[in-house]
Image (cartoon, rainbow, N blue to C red):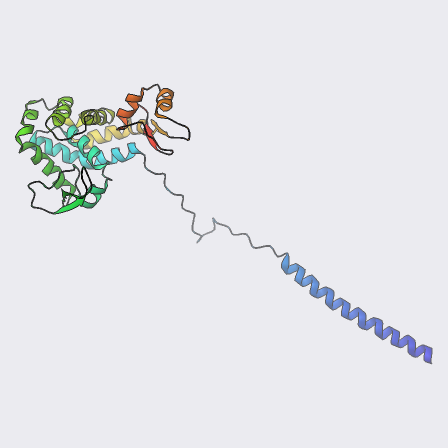
Length: 273
């Protein structure tokens, strides 16, 4: 009887341990399963999901100039018809003086030609130039800046000799502006001529409407502007870049409007004469 009782107790003990162990294993398995749970894969192409926007490539110097010409060539041609100033000269001056429309003075005052406040009763802004905080003319619209540029040249006797030149003589105009005191930079004529020849601005000095010339330029020239640039790398010098592209240092300086030989890593240089 005692033996049977002990046997029964032993069976009860084994059954109790077995049940407890089973519950523990089940709980551990659940915990382990949760730890190994794999996140659901998100289908980025599924309807309703926003696609990642790829940043647009930054505009090159050539792109900026082409955009500037497309916007302001019609105005330059209109001024040429009214005041006999070559449209190529007006556009080249506008590009150079305004930083292709992105210069600080241009952005805050619509002043595309760097004309100061002398004899001016309109709006004005103050901007560092030859001296700190000089007074510059401010315009409500860029077209008024173009008109004021025309009046600035036609109403001053020192520019009178320019109007004896042929309308197609952009080189004579470029050198004449410097000689008459429009700019103190001795390379100013070369910079204007470089822009006029590189971007075929002389085409706007003829009778063809600006829109036709713009269409021609966009289809035949814009790609060459984009592929004729070089981004300065570590260890580059102006001499090494010039030699690599079969240019002289002087040519590289001229087409990039550089005063000296200092260049910075990441700077974009034009390398086609």
